[in-house]
Length: 294
Image (cartoon, rainbow, N blue to C red):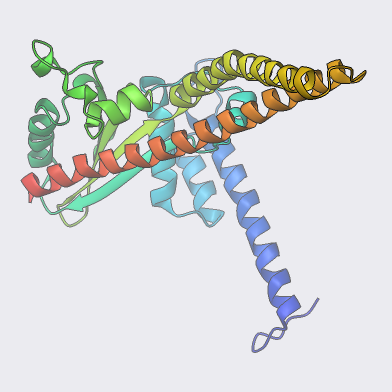
């Protein structure tokens, strides 16, 4: 099909966008595979180097910043909540997000920002335990932290984690996220880009299993209650009804199915809300760092 660069019909424009989107998707898949091959792997000494993978990604039209971010996240994955996530976990929650990332830029140098982060995560609001330092290159470093089950500053008294607005409650208790990373990237102007990044592997897996357990317990109970209620109605209003047992069985099945759908919908809604609150909590952490570093 020949396109006039000055004018496109609606169908031609639609075709153009569809083709461009497909090519971009194919390029991203190819670059992603090359990036995975580029990671250090003693079993594959002939793997593609990072520089080669980066160049291939650039030639595919993917921005270098995105490639660097993807490579860093892959390097960090073993340090975070990396756990096997089956497809049924994803389907159970109806949730496809794999990570949470929030970022901000400040004019302060990396050294100053690291000192501020130490103060912020050492305070009671975002108290976290240092786990590791991952150096990606001379300009990018990731600080890995673990969210404690209960903040040490409050163990002797009432745990602040019971405050539903607290960082610990939203991140650890509700979303089941144990670890997160704060990535510091030195910018050309001397400033610092700060990214809070975490994996949702453990969160999705634990919550999907919890949903299945709740369904396994609640659905039979709902079915039994529905059958009992139907039995009472049938015996009261139509004691001689031949199809009574069938109606009772159908009522129980309907109650169980209805309970299953209801529980699933409520749990999915709650998990999506928890995901949004985790993002909000990370934004608050970044805001605290930005204000103190500014």
